Length: 340
Length: 233
Image 1 (cartoon, rainbow over the protein chains, first blue to last red):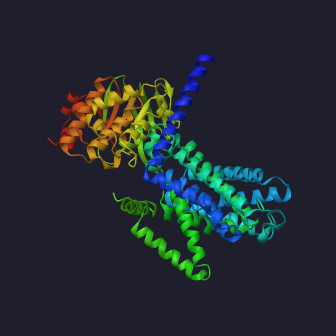
Image 2: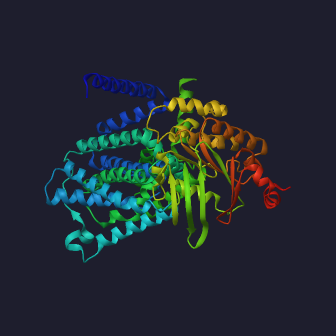
Image 3: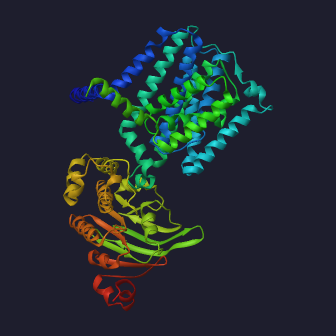
């Protein structure tokens, strides 16, 4: 490459950087941007209020499930591939991460990376049926694959290799310091969200959305459906894997329960609560879900009942999730306070 | 330019195309007419690779394409404007057009955009609007425009008049006439035989998966059966 073209390339990068800089600046001036920044600052300040491991744990769980729900939202909301088997990626990464930490003594971050990459490999595997199946059929197929994983890992015959119903336990946590653990999870959440939102806004994101809107139209426009569907599955599986690995470390172990369809439904419920195809709505949904779960933790039976009612109400009155209406109400109040 | 040789296609056991022979010359505008379920859409889907023919050859510019994947065929220069428009309804008009230019390698995107806006000035006014909020006629315009954005050598159009008011139908067909004048080869499938025969140079009549007749407008107008069944005179 000649020096001239190199400098030209550099110029382009600079232009792009300054472009995204001004985009960020404009974004931070909008109501939504300001609210996001306030929320993020709030999350950063939480450890000043409490260093209690239990209370920080609630926040950490919510963050882990924000990533998990966002990974589902990316696949379903952006690419239109509704999976009921998101727990497959979550669980397999949990197992692999735990295995590498417990038996091969790898540092947690390396194990987490390996776990997520194995998740990506499973994303590729699960993505293959998705090339032929659509809509509810894909949902059923992925759910059944999740159940197969659940029963395989639970099976007594495989216990020597897969750990049986006990799974893998006694994994050290990321850090003994609860505050440090909290910040590591916060960084994971913010980075995951930034990457997912950035992909959504990129050219590839437009291609994903075109597949969601009309796959035949996309194919007729020269888009390689096979390639992009598989890429979407792999990206989604990677972030579900990150969440799964973090979840295993947070709980200091995994058991076959992580493969239960229940976890897939958690992701779907949280993403739908927040708002599908928004990514950031998943965080709102997840926090809402876990705080509510904490509130009703003394009556676990009642909490399931209440969740079901909330979900029905959300679907009935706000089919696009609560993120948008909540933002609009808040803006009204904000304007009222400022006297606009 | 395009040659279809003895193509057969089945949906399961149901025969949809039977020994179809058809060739489209460079810069021609050919039309396929026929009743519902004759296999018109299937014919286009087979050409663009959305369906694979069970037997026969399809040759485009000297290359066999009957076993290629749809996105490869699209990149070779065959644009398929599918039935019922198949737009990306949640995206803006401009984004739809950008995706139409997806397989374009050289960067004359702006020129093409200008060309498309010249043919459909309406789309220029609405370029920031979501495709789902356009009227039926505008959506059809956008569907054709999106296909044109890939700078195709051959444009396949599936029932561009579907579900449109007669007046809008005429304006769509005027646009198709303009596209033809610019030198794009096109193969059009249409139920509205009267309109189709006005624009088409060679008209192929497809019935129950077979090409029953073909010829120019003048030739076909002499046929008593065509007169009775398609033109209603």
